Image (cartoon, rainbow, N blue to C red; front, side):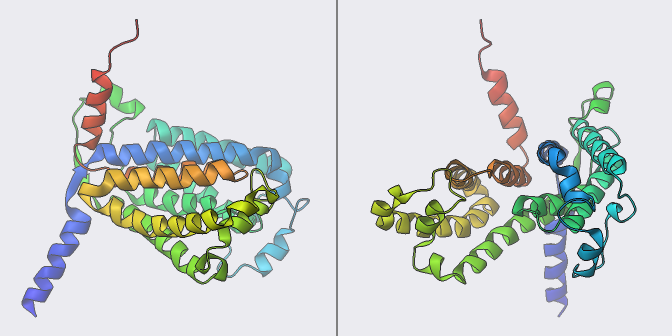
Length: 299
């Protein structure tokens, strides 16, 4: 019994309290903030359609059909000027977060923005909105540090080592996203029989829908199964130190390919690549910096 307890404590220490380079957290913070800002910019033209009672759904209907406790600042801010102000302030805090200025306070505002938007506009919430919401919470509770922030420019350039609990939670979140997706797809007969990609490219979701795909039905069946296997393999490749590069590459090819053949999924591509930053390890940032420093300067 004592040995089991010691094993659990060692595992807990390994997953949560072993320290890693704080610049990994900084990379996630900057990448997350920039992707969240880009997503907010895309939402800006339709902010009143999505978030006001004159838009798609009256807030009373949203509250009545909300499955959990309704938490949204738009419960109290309903007028167009107030909604616009919320988006402007949230975007400003995303930029502060990217710059590392008051990062904890900025991260709190960014988390509240994602919580509020997802609750208020469920009809237009996308998969990447939910990923950004999850990461907004994980960034909020993670060590912030001073690496790669505007305030560090007048502080000693010392690389600090901080607990890895936030990175562990981010990595587990990415694994859950992929494995849950695979399980959901296995419940669909179109994925199981290999017909999904054919139907997808015939639909309005395709960048070039049309009957041109029909002669390639056999090849698209293979693509369907390859995509499913890739989604299953990516989290395992990312977790293993020796195969992380192949996980990065496979994820880039998978989501890049999805973005190329689909309408308006570029944000999903950017969001998922942002999550891979959590899988950087000690020394990776230094190696990347050395590679850039070794590049000859343009004449």
